[in-house]
View 1 (cartoon, rainbow, N blue to C red):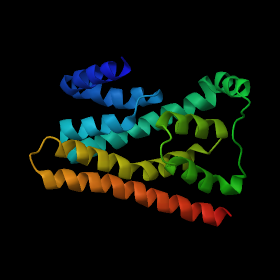
View 2 (cartoon, rainbow, N blue to C red):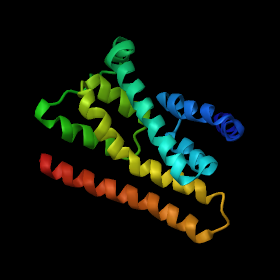
View 3 (cartoon, rainbow, N blue to C red):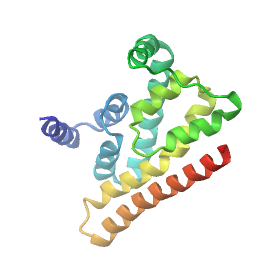
View 4 (cartoon, helix red, strand yellow):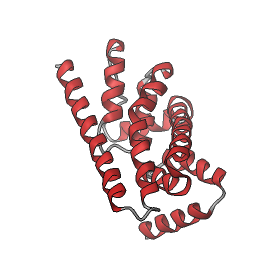
Length: 185
């Protein structure tokens, strides 16, 4: 049922006004909706260049909203939710803020909304949070928008190249994560 709803939403966004698509890229990943699907849609709909620009802009707005929701509006409920599960808000040494932020942002498989909320709850400074977060996520936006554009073309080699780009981004992030983890140890 959830997959059917997901497909219907994608179909609706594919024919929606561009402003609605951008609004969806900002709002939907505040919950458990995968941002990557929206970036593929943006690439498919707007092409790689414009899709990437719109995707990064929407990502910046999403990260900003998620951060401030965690810092202000949802802080109490999120802390109580964690406490009921025997967890607490992560803390870090302020000297390790950049490493903590990078490691958290590039950890594979962690949904965007969880990253935003945890980093906001942890008290990472916003002046560092947004630029570092965007720098860490922009390669993914580029890879997924490029992949989305290749789906509209009849060129098999471009599709293979786009998938290779996504795999390369994932491998690069894994390598960076290992390097940062070694420096921490």
